[in-house]
Image (tube, rainbow, N blue to C red; front, side, top):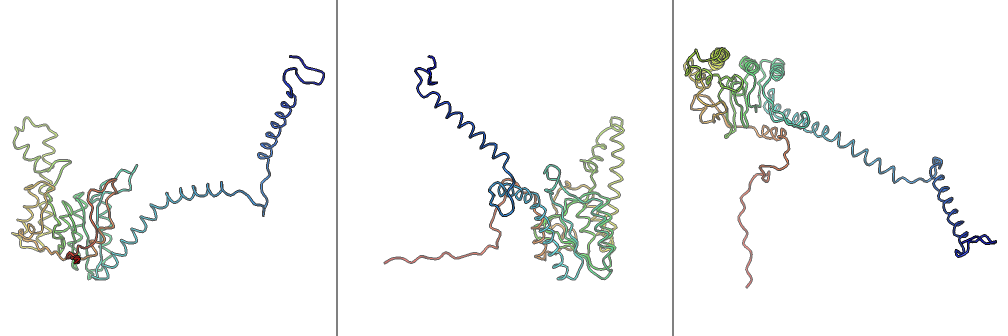
Length: 332
């Protein structure tokens, strides 16, 4: 194929025209892109496309809400707790202190952590008792698995030393050190199904009484020095806890009864998580009431466990009402 004088190639009629149209379209596309990239910013009063702006604003607001929503939720729960505490305080004309230990959902990497009686708790409770006048009763709402012996004994002695009446409410359980606090109060109020627990000392993961019994069953020459030292600490812990419980009970019970109860709770008769019911406490000689204020149950609802993916217990959270079946009319 060779070009002719008219500029067209033989065998391809209209080739130049097609090439010129292609070049024009390419130039138009480049000009359009250049105009879009170099388009000046819209001035005030000019109409603009706000779809991108609204889309970005939506995601920003969603991110901010996801960060602030947990904070607002916790603040709302804290205000609800304070409202119930103030309501119960006005109703009973007392200082109300809540010591409730749950699994906490706020923790590192979202892993729940357990709570127990510690030095910080003792500092806060001692301060609350110190700020309470001697003629004002104190009500303590207690829900705890126990904790440090030092912290529990500090709180117990502060409870026993308050001149006005001290009442401990146990809606569910108060084990170990929590039982020591309940014994120090002038009145124990428990739910009918609530329990207390033994107060025998624990050294690490082992009960002190079990360590002593294990050493007694072996030849001392075959026991390591570390085990013997641990046994000496266990023996001291047994005596110390017994004396603390007896001293607290002796202020309100006859000496023989105080020694009997102290021995029962500290000698290691049961495992450390053994539940002591209201009836068992009464058989020991302790006065236990079941007149639990409704506000205590409402307060416990504001201390939920960390949310699980699938609830293990479900029910309709309203009082049950027995309804008679309605008979439907029969057609003749």
